[in-house]
Length: 125
Image (cartoon, rainbow, N blue to C red; front, side, top):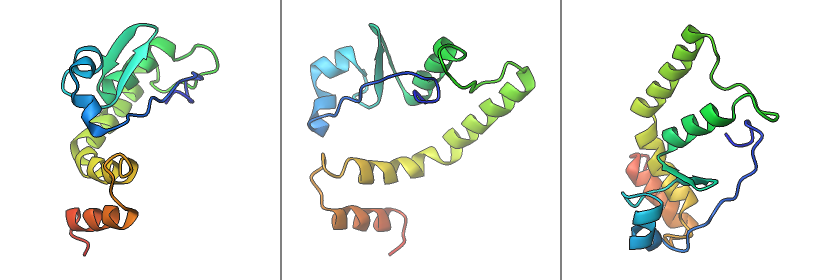
């Protein structure tokens, strides 16, 4: 998203899964102890789709950004429809997969254990 909008960014890697449950994190980043969160020049926002829509609304059409939400109302509605389908039908199963793959080091599990968990979750094995 940030690349399409021509923005620079910094990814802050968590040291442990416990960090997102700390009182400081809950008070300043995400009150539900989840990721991601975004701090944009002091403005703090959380939840993936809210962050995406905020960045699009603020930066689309500036710098060297790509237009992600068209100005045509009907075409924009189709984009929103696709986002809703993704949220309703793909997010939950994919998030389990992503958590296993992306956070395996933080969760201190091996690559083998990670794939075993995925196979069990998706009833592949």
